[in-house]
Image 1 (cartoon, rainbow, N blue to C red):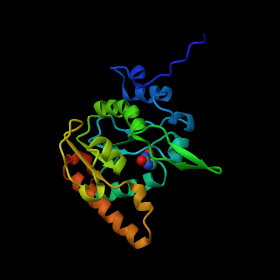
Image 2: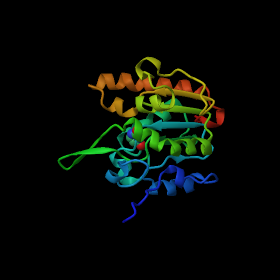
Image 3: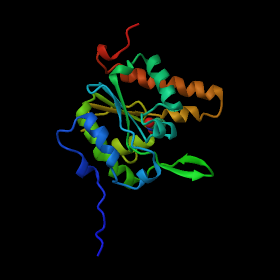
Image 4: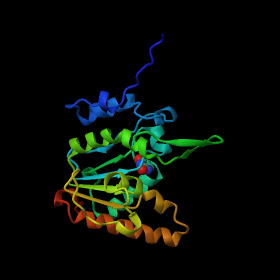
Length: 218
Ligand code: URA
């Protein structure tokens, strides 16, 4: 009888002494859920190993999937502008996602973003925990409901609880704000500007908890 091939899951791939670079390489082999079948590659987090701030999004988008880097598409560009306006030095920020592969469905030739389900998020969690333990951020910032519900509480409501600073077993402080892509989807220019102002205000609040070294000198 032909033996069924056992595909590697995070438990097989995460060595206790692995560095961030080792993890970034190992995650490419991960078959912990099925999303890899539809993705070009896994997209691991990036940033300084000792970054004070870790920003956690949902999953890589189309551009990130093709380029292999997190937050390089339109949402990432908006995030860069907001961090700059909030005075947070990008060099002190680590960006990542709760799920490391781009989950999509196809419509014609287009690949459309598909929210990862609870099982997929749980399957990918060891990678995020490994990143958190290597980076050791002072503050984790969940961008959007998927990250906030995975890392803070299942019933977390970004609309009501954004900007609240909480203690967490994952880091000294954890908080959540909107996902930058929600600002890009705003109905008109005026509401987009208003949403952007609130987003920058949330980031400025986070900046108050950071050491001077993580802030931009003007
Ligand atoms: N949206 C995310 O949540 N993460 C990315 O890396 C890009 C877009």
